[in-house]
Length: 240
Image (cartoon, rainbow, N blue to C red; front, side):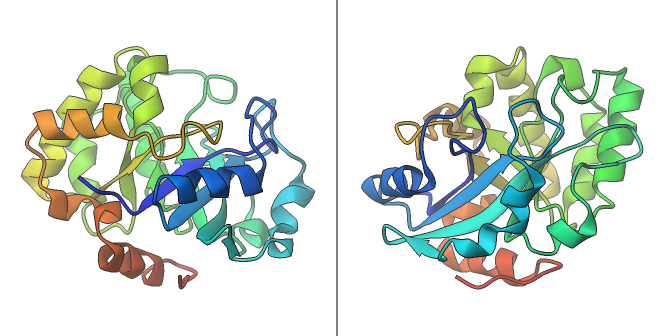
């Protein structure tokens, strides 16, 4: 499977990452990826950049090293009500928004509490991607919630890094894949790369989708036209 975008990556603006935006774009170019999402951590994470980082993204050109760089962020879901850590003033400026649950920000809850959090995330009009949903500590009611992503304008992420770093991710992502397939829910495959060497290394996520016999036409970043449509249908439309 050939993917055309890696839309969840981190630069040295997130201080536990190891590549500048130029180096990350070059890493994408070397992997033959025409599109890269630059999604550094929003301010509630301990390693995050200052708010000024997100207010000043216009300083970056849209194309770097021949790669279209989507200037965005990885929001933190902060509680069960759906609160996030950038306000509308900043979110309107973003070209791509991932929203994830991190233990440093939101304590893992019960399945019911986690489910409530994800249901409220679905209400946020600026979120494009629900990031790395498979961790055991954030299990939610997959059967109830996954079908609601259909036609929501939001994509469930299959995160290659999660398989290595998040307990239970592989098994839970397989379950989510089967439900997405059953309900025709579109997904996105990302690396969550924290260095240029990891950009475009999707295999640990695509292996799970292959095991679930997942249809390629439901992978939004497996086709340029499909991804362009996703960008055009955002709350704040973006062109490539």
